Image (cartoon, rainbow, N blue to C red):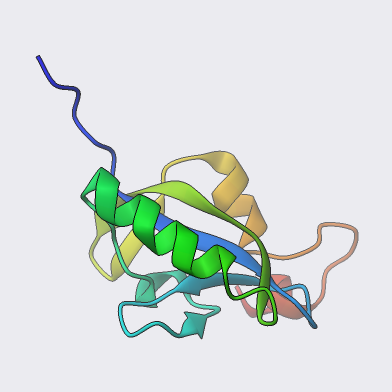
Length: 99
């Protein structure tokens, strides 16, 4: 019996700013997880990851992160990904102040 594929998004860090970014369906990077492309096919997800890896002048450390569909787009299924999108945790600033 084939295993069920968990939906994923391609995520990385912006090369200059270091912000968490996500690949969209139109091949651009976004800092908003709700705009990321949800990948439901394993082969397509691997292809999108290879494409992201080839864009080293824009992003570093690209990988596939598990998500689940939400009301406003993909939502992280793991604490690490939820934590990453809020930014550094050493003090209250930036993205953390906007929540």
